[in-house]
Image (cartoon, helix red, strand yellow):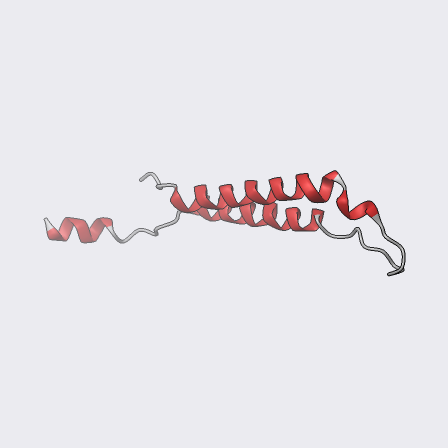
Length: 81
């Protein structure tokens, strides 16, 4: 019985589909951070309200959270044999 368990443990913990999901999740997280870029002012004496728009305050954090959920699913997913 001990020998049978050792034969089953030879597979990888994360399958190739899991690695693809990890890569997709990483790309989604990076795209969320790219959505946050910008909104500054060239002149420090002038206040720019572009940093308080929908893209940076709402859309980018939602995209990042979706990427984190994809990462968790990719890690917790049990590969079928």
